[in-house]
Image 1 (spheres, helix red, strand yellow):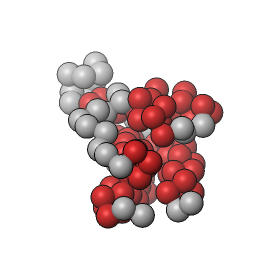
Image 2 (tube, rainbow, N blue to C red; image 1 turned 60 degrees about the horizontal axis):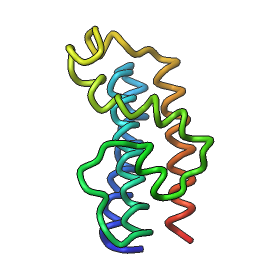
Image 3 (cartoon, rainbow, N blue to C red; image 1 turned 90 degrees about the horizontal axis):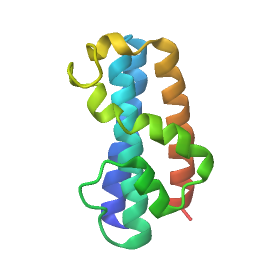
Image 4 (cartoon, rainbow, N blue to C red; image 1 turned 45 degrees about the horizontal axis):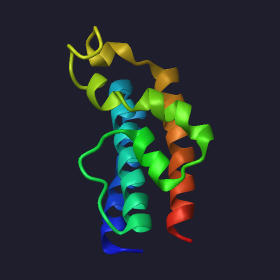
Length: 127
């Protein structure tokens, strides 16, 4: 594993762990934000590992997933998760205060799907 890959993946896993902790604290918007961050960083880790270069400044999870060969079954989830890096933080981004837009089932589902994506990415990096 390349050193750059390692640091991106390590931070992705830490973000996922922080999402789990925020779920217990009922901070659902933070769960979704941290899941988006975890997936983005893990995809960037795999991008680095496969292409031996950085992905640049993109936040498009679908673009990153396409570039690294993520299975298509994850793409619907990624399309919904991509805007979360903005919608979970700014009150003018999604017509409501971020903390009011997310609930427990949304956070749980997002965390579960994030775990599936991260598991697949880890399996590809460790090959």
